Length: 502
Image (cartoon, rainbow, N blue to C red; front, top):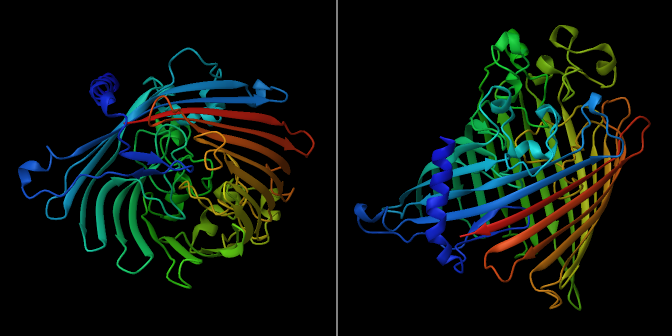
């Protein structure tokens, strides 16, 4: 399968290089893909394939992770991981509103140019270019996956899809900042029938995380030992996202009679029809039967201050409601606030006001000032001293306000401030195709809710278009995390990415 995938990518890439100057697709700063040119509708079934289009992407990702004091015994091992790969996406031409899309993705971290840790369990950011489960079960680190494969029907502002796809909403994101996106299986519906309004709904039955080649439960963490499961590291085959609730696991689901593969239902949308285009109202909700549900409301309003200045205040409120998850796994993402019988302990339970409930809420605010190429913003988030937020679908409740690279600041009783700035050198006619971002973030955790520690985070990033090669761009992100608590280990993280779209 892997050899076939490599050949497939290579053979299709070479003849398409000649069309590199045609921007069929572009990348946003948040890594979402925009399809600028789509296949035109055809009048005959025999033309749906011949008039279809191929979208390609070659990319490399290099991840560096350096501890202030390396401690391999504690799993804190310095590393740099190089991933090479890409993807091919084929879209048929639509006929009578029907079309199909398939996306094959491949990544390899077997170049020998990097410094991989002695144990794949010690991988940090580089884990998303390596299939750890395959690696420890004798199947190699490189992998290929058909991450997208769906049928679509579109008519009069409505779009219906069935199959495997990227579904970007407040709670679910592709988060395609590594090599292979986070995707889902199920049904999705999108409507743009109303003016300046988009509404999306989804019934998602399975999820494929970025470092997996299999689709798995959207919520269950496999806590079985290797001996019990008959394979090495079974947790790496199910939902092992960094933000997973480890108390919502195989053992507890079995004990409480909970469905191992419940569906994730999402309703998401926004409108700009209020007060013309100056106000954007966004709302989203999700539900997993017999576990929990959540709702979000966000308002952003843009003021024209004159002389090219625009001021945009924003507020966000998110509420999470318990529907059985608390009694199964407890209030903490670690699972340690569950009852003794369900894997918890007294110390963790004492740190939460109600350890048997996942009821919680978040308040957030931000203020952004923009003029021409420059932008500066201040963001704030506060998580109630109740339960941790459950969000293992790569959409994060603090995103856009205070979340920085690889940070998880939605633990109960966490307060975060972020000062952020950006400058577009191309827009300012200084350096064509160069955009820079920088920020300072201060995270204040509740010390009783271990293993979190207060931190100061310094971030810098840039995106540079490679002008001599159309549709190629270089990205750099670097972050220094200074942890203020005793017995913590500061670290520096650097990520470099090269993208070529065709």
